[in-house]
Length: 143
Image (cartoon, rainbow, N blue to C red; front, side, top):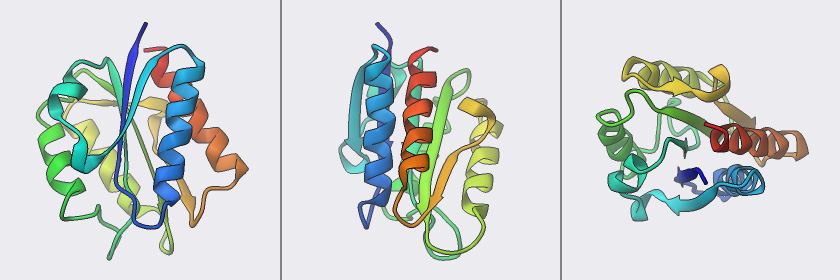
């Protein structure tokens, strides 16, 4: 059985809903899944996974949340080479630049981005966004 970790930061609950959908997709595909708030996540847990997902909404000028998620992602850069990862998050305005920057950053650290790009949605995830998150989870479970 594959093991998939889903680590997220959420302020409004939108990205948390996306994280739960990623976890559901992976679980439905037979993976052993943990969905964890970034403040409770460990690098050791991610090291045990062939694939994992990270979720964070766009903040400020389209950047990752700076107090908890950014430092965690900086640490993840050191362990993600050769791993398949999923990225997801919501945004309120802009055009998704934070996700494109995040994809480039993680690819540059040696990770393969599942599906070639992150899953994003504006504001609360609708049925299509939740389905895309579940599909991401299923893809990660298949790694």
